[in-house]
Image (tube, rainbow, N blue to C red):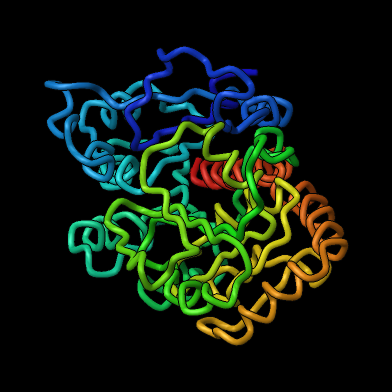
Amino acid sequence: MTSSDTLIQLFNGRDDGSRAKPSPDSEPRHRNAEQVLRDNGFIVETIPTFGWPWNPAAKLHNAYLGVDPLRALRVLFTRRKAAVVCAHLESGLLILLLRRLLGFRPPVVIWEVPWSPGWKYREIVSRLAIPRADCCVVFSSNQINMLHDRYGKDIPIVFIPFCIDTDFYRPMLAPDGIEPYVFSCGFDAGRDFDTLLDVAAQIPGRVMIKAARSFALDQDAHPNVTVSREHLTYPAFRDLYAGASVVVVTTRDTPNASGVTTLMEAMAMGKPVIVSNNHALRDYLPPPDAGIVIPVGDRAALQAAIANLLDNPMRAAAMGQKAREFALAKFHPKVHFQAVANLMRGVATAGQDQRSVKR
């Protein structure tokens, strides 16, 4: 392999790779990611952001941190024979703006295009970066038409389903002494806990919600509902799934795939799931034998689905088993990163062909 086989990764995060590697059961990871890419002929190089004072935004939100001028120049001048550059939106911005001026030929892929309507900064960055990219990757296919409508029909956009660590999130026994409960969790504005709370009084037993600290609950009105707001370790968070008899993922209609991580984690743990038929989640919705899909905001359907699963534990158990099988087939990291490798190889080959024609 040569430098022309190198896949450069530029992410917005601060991790420089120096922290200790987590133990296999301490937190979820994208296991086998680099191995799959190597098996497909890539040398993977992740270039971290610079710290203060070399990166003026080093102490700011990741969306600003990623616009790292020194890192961008490092790539533009020293990685000129790379096969492909894969970057978060902000991390790729300066490379996309300067590459023609500096004769930088490797294709640039924007990874996981964010959808942040109303955030002026990100709208400006998107308008500058997305039309200049060789390919854009989204995790929800409903975003393809939205991006085409906003930035032009010729923008190359590819949908790749996201993944989770299906080894970390796996079927487990509930912690000792825990009575099963109906569980729901989420931290983004697209979650619809109101619909769940409206039917909570008709649910026998407890309802457990893991939510942001700002989530307000009238405990007197919902005596059987418990809310966890504190920060939890990954194993403690996983225990919340393990103790659940049913996992509910209710969302509003959203442009982004609200609830997708919760849905995948619950299915990977072999839990029967009830999920809103949000069009942004359509790529991740379980088949009928692996979960129950209800209309968005439909309280009667939610109550009936919960009652059905609680009253039929054998059906719930069978559904959880099918959910696990579905998660392994669709959301296993190897499935995801093979799709990533196929895309990157295709983009790299197209870029090489285009450079050959220009010569």
